[in-house]
Amino acid sequence: MKRFASLFIALLGFIALHAEELPITFGELPQNAKIFVLTYFKNIPLKEVYMERRASLTQYEVKLKGGIDLQFDRTGLCTEVTCDNGSVPDAVMPKRILTTTKKHFPKNYISKYENNGRMYEIELDNGTTLTFSKTFRLVDIEE
Image 1 (cartoon, rainbow, N blue to C red):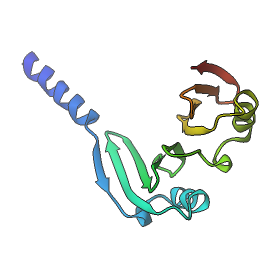
Image 2 (image 1 turned 180 degrees about the vertical axis):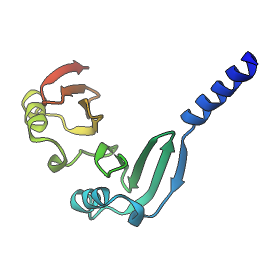
Image 3 (image 1 turned 120 degrees about the vertical axis):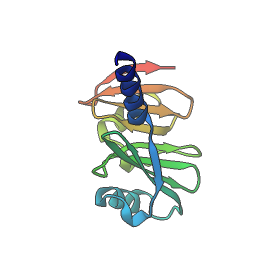
Image 4 (image 1 turned 120 degrees about the horizontal axis):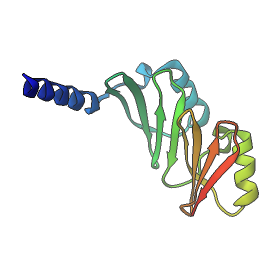
C-alpha cells in the first residue's frame, strides 16, 4: 500500500510539473496583454501565441517577428520581454530602472526584462545581468 501511495504521489508530481502548451489566437489573450502588444509592438508582425498551463499556473507567450518574445501572467500582466536582435523599448521599462541602467551602462542596451513579482532582472546586450528590488533599487550586478 505504501508503494502505491508513493507511486501515486510521484505521478501527481509529474502531472503538476508537466506543462501543456496550446496554440491560441491573439484575440484569446487577456485584454491587458493585447493592449500591451498593440501599444509597444504594434508594427511588428505576430508569429505565434501560446497559452501554457501547469497545475494552477496559466501564462501566455507571444512570439513576434525579429526575435521578440513576450510572456504574460494569467491576468495579462507582462512578466518578460526578450529582444534577441535589439533592445527592449524604453517605454516598457520602469523609469527608475531605465534611469539607473543608462547611468551605469550608457553604452549598452537592455535586451531582456523580467518581472517575477518579487524582483526585476535586466539583461544587457553585453551579457551583464542587473537585479532590482520591488522598489527599483539595484541589488546585484552579474557580469
